[in-house]
Image (cartoon, rainbow, N blue to C red; front, top):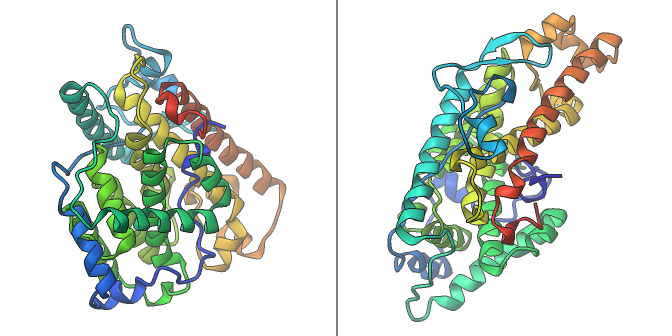
Amino acid sequence: MSLALLWVVSPNSEVSNCFGFFESVREGKSLTARDRNLMCMARFKNGRKQRWNSSSLYSDLRHSCLGGSELENEDKFSVLSSMVANPAGEMVVVLSEQKVYDVVLKQAALVEKQLRSSGDLDVKPEIVVPGTLSLLSEAYDRCGEVCAEYAKTFYLGTLLMTPARRRAIWAIYVWCRRTDELVDGPNASHITATALDRWESRLEDLFQGRPFDMLDAALSDTVAKFPIDIQPFKDMIEGMRMDLRKSRYKNFDELYLYCYYVAGTVGLMSVPVMGIAPESHAMTESVYNAALALGIANQLTNILRDVGEDARRGRIYLPQDELAQAGVSDDDIFAGKVTDKWRKFMKNQIKRARMFFDKAEKGVIELSSASRWPK
């Protein structure tokens, strides 16, 4: 099923506080001696700071272009128009899609720049400071252990990747899980907007080669090797901010942006690691669009699966305008009423998710052959 195995939406929240970082995020606690040793590992890396991106949706409204692959033709569209069709066939303005697409264009430009300069997107060679290699290896191993313990199917898929790619995906996964845990984990009630600001500052340090702890060190090394931009990581933190202040979504435009923040970003983080096939004729941004679509599809699927669970937490991740049009109220959802109106509404939501899955599936063949098996 397309790329779902490698970025199965934002990490779930059943894991306990196993990473030992919540207090440091809230209060800025000092590092252990071991963590100080690990901090040096990213400082010997050269040429970090890379970029990347996301976006779009329904192919029937794309402007076709001459030449290129089917995927390219479907993804090329006028950025001046954010008009799309919802599952009911009505036209709606999607402002969020344009915002996300700007991120896609940025990442595509970064990747193409690297292709022109190096001829491929393979991992950069190691530059090792004496005494740090074993520490860095230990950091990646710990990320792998976290994946194996809390995302068993995901972990098995990563074993089909090359070692360098596998370790990088582990590091990305662990950072995403830790970020998600801030608002959905056992310490969520203590997390504030200020804590998320500190987490973002820590992210910026990580991208500059100043990791705070062992798990940060693995990601710091990863972003030094692959053309990964910081923006999707920042956007995921923004999704966590939305969860602190928002429990309803007026329309799909708002929900789309949320889905991008908490799940579409994972696809954008992962494609630079997985790589694009050298023989691919698709536009670079179209491959990222497919990865983005997979994240959106998975998040929409999670939302539809977890309606009851979210309602018990006072949250409804469904477009309010579409609920009203279907004759379904918030009270109906809180009461768990399953009516014909509800079934009809859900069928349309499922149809929308499938549209995104269809879009995502077309991107698989454009990936590097070394990354297709775990798709």
